[in-house]
Length: 211
Ligand SMILES: [Zn+2]
Ligand SMILES: [Zn+2]
Ligand SMILES: [Zn+2]
Ligand SMILES: [Zn+2]
View 1: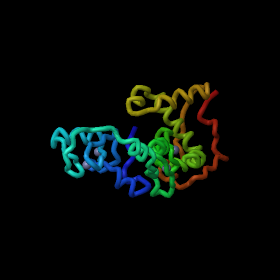
View 2: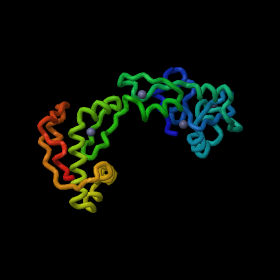
View 3: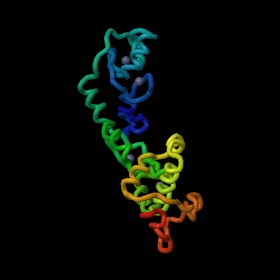
View 4: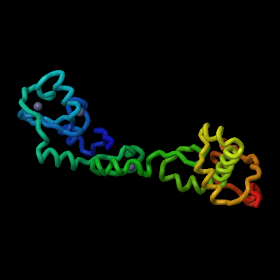
């Protein structure tokens, strides 16, 4: 499981009390040494420390005799520590345990995603994806058609340079028809950046295909 950064801990005191004094992050696979304060460290950090420095607590320099699992109290405090989503600075305030935040972040509405339509490649927040798909519907169709044209013209070269086979197969299956030619789009993707509304009325939608 990817690790949630200590900078996302919602309560600063939790971070201060629990952090590993070697890597200054929340302890991962935690181990506790038998010093009076029962200090807690990441297993990996701790193992490296002991190899180098011997049985001295990295935090208070007390000698210790053994390494233990966290106490039930330490375990439950760690497990219940609340974190903010890493996109919090963008205005969206999700708070949860490290497990919940780890699940949330990849699907966060504030996470930046890239449009998967071939050659579109625009990046935006996930919450803007639906609007993007509907605003660029016409342009997306053009881009998909261009991709198919490229694949048809020279399939090996197109695939070798990143052509999207899925698009080719998807469109082929969708429209069991014969490809003839593709017209150049009247707008390049560059200068259409801000024009979200396409007027489809005087362009022939079916003009690219022969049935
Ligand atoms: Zn550590
Ligand atoms: Zn200690
Ligand atoms: Zn979020
Ligand atoms: Zn797009």
